[in-house]
Length: 190
Image (cartoon, rainbow, N blue to C red; front, side):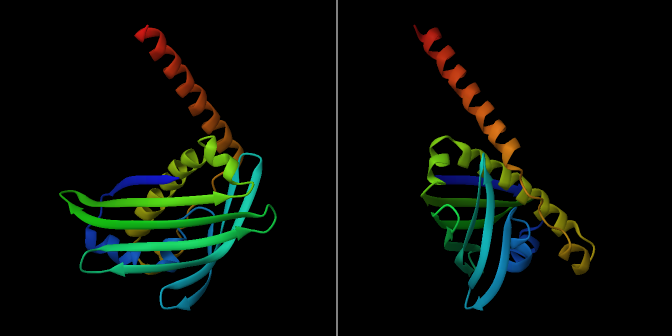
């Protein structure tokens, strides 16, 4: 599944870039993420928990993070497995920061591959809805960290968990609304 997002924050690009280089702090802004080990050379071990409708998956694995300070770009390549369901997940993500008149624009392009039981939710649109919700929580957390008055204050800011059942019903409502829009569109075209 391809995911492309543009995120805007009302903070200077240098300040946002500095936070993006502090991987443990940035990881705290990703709902359900837990960084468990810094293995050096841009490699990190951790886990990401997600509630996908009736299923909870905890993907444990490793990610490699690279960045180019001059271009203000970076990449994340990771993979993990959920032992309980036998699901596997991979992500390849590219990001870039650019200054705008009022802050920073963050461009994100990711390719997410799921296999096993978790893959069925990618077909229902639940993964896209979950992605939208996670990005929303990430941006709120990012803003709060950047607005903190001290490093100690910033260190305690973290994203809340996204609840699976509300996410499931939100995705279901989005799917039903999309169905009716397509149905009405077909009838109007006839």
